[in-house]
Image (cartoon, rainbow over all chains, first blue to last red; front, side):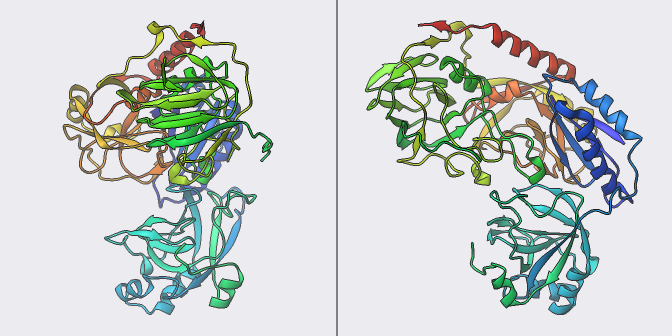
Length: 228
Length: 318
């Protein structure tokens, strides 16, 4: 583990390299333990693939106090998953109607569209990070056979609920936004709803599975194929 | 969410100006769902606007970028405008910045366009009564979160606030008012991927002049100057703190501010002190920037000293 200064009131912990065994478990544990350990020193935490940004209240605690807290939890981190981790199943209406890039992606991968859907659906994905936009969860890792680089020209408007692939990551767009991920389907469930409790169906460390649903089920679950 | 909607006194937005945003101290503890901080770009001028109205420092007020705001009072209260130099008129009469003014129902409050600096703050006694989203009233347009409807003020928006006494005029003595100009010296703590920048690159960064560009907004300020090249193109996405200096492939630094994305994958050299991002946010395009390295201990000391110094400055009665 390595600690670097990030800013006047922020330190960043590096817990290994992405893809290294156990690093995502250490990130999840470090974030949880630091929340308890730092208490009112803490302003916010940003867990990501292999790091945790710790933002602290410099008028209460200096960086030495925060480093002390980090040292204290260091020995408690293990590569093993501390809990079974929640498994969240999200419905997806796959297909060319809902996923504008499915055919192209299948062609490039030398697979049929059904095979792409099958492979995407067979995976269990970890929530590595949340960012980019409110409720945008980075899920990984996507099977290499269907991994695809971002579009060379990003779309101005990706619809809410669009399910995309970028390299070995997959995600659901929580709101209309510009974006360059390859779209393969649409999820009817809101990924970010300010009025819901909780606001998001997933959090960092959860595991996500996708379940293919029919067009009818998609509409029955409140989905829409509009551009919004 | 509890909110008193019974409040029918307040201010009517006649003209919203180029970009006027409802802000409080900012939104904290919400990075876990991807929400950024928001809050005033110039926290010093913002807190003075509040203090001159007799408020606590983080009370909900307006950030007026570049100017052009016209409000009609539908309440008797006190207001104060601080920050960028711009003409302030109440019922056509020119009024002083950095002091509070009594206003009455029917009064017209006009902020002209900034001639020096570019962020002005308008506070009202008791603050604007705007519902909180995720613990804060701060508007972040990119996220459509906060404010009245997640965006900048629009014509005919109504800003509720309670009535307040005309008494209690306060002003900040001229000696204590910040001076805005066309240059700023920013203090930087090296950190993050600093080891990915060679000694030569770092020396170039600290001995060169950079210019602010028009590709600057509440997310970040893009600078133009000698290229700084890290030895790596990108990094695994990680958390970005306030003031972080991100260096994309073109070697031109971007200083990330209040509305930054919470995670990102560009190498970062370190971060600018918040005391200094406040100065940066007052600069117009084409202004000159220089940098100086400080340690995190220096940064703690400077912040504590400034807080202490500001606390002992008492606004004067007027």
